[in-house]
Image (cartoon, rainbow, N blue to C red; front, side):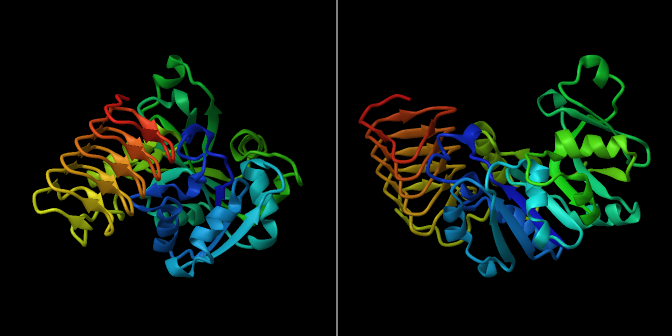
Length: 347
């Protein structure tokens, strides 16, 4: 089997974090985010992976190279123009000759792909879509299924009447298993979507189109700063299987009198000075925390400096930032790369 990761978006919803860093390689647990999807594929013994790119593709290739460091073979394709999810699959057709797992590039999940693949094969499906249960599907659109798993319909912006008889409210999880013959349904060289074009066509033609409901898997779309922050809090809480936080190894230069909890992820080349407190947070490479500064429930990207007596809580701080003395960065704050806050600033 092969895999295609759709990583061509500009990450507009995730700004300011994606101004300089393409969304597929924003740090997650101090590693490029895309590695979470690559690890999930590897667990299903899928190592032939194509990345469909469009925005800043050179930066992504510089970070991931040929994939050998991570135990996979990576291939890079740059779309000539935004082609949509199914259009990107069609564009990669020369390289995708077998059953293919397709991932949307902003999905964080610990799903067992082997279970999905077995489901797909048993039903001899032409396409299988993974669904995930959510409390409120209005943001995503509801997908309903029959008892045997066949997809019945897609409901955008479902109304309360649409939901009242649904025992499980399921939405598109952005993971698909596709057979090569699907290519016959996708036109050449135009913007064409799985969700809005191809899948409705399969329903109309009564093709073998099934849904796997991932009831017991973690799932989150990290496409906004709020959900990106939440993903890290879930990671530190141990809610994501097969991607456990590990704050027990070498943790940088930490002063004797600094207070750093065991849950926090601290890069090995961080410096944390006396009296500083790090609570339930992730600190990237080269972060420097001065005396009596406090970092709590926050994500700090690499080479940021947090000066003495500054307080950062429930925030995301980009790369190479400067937080002045006695500054206070509060809940829901998101600072882009190279932001500089003067002493005593309140954000």
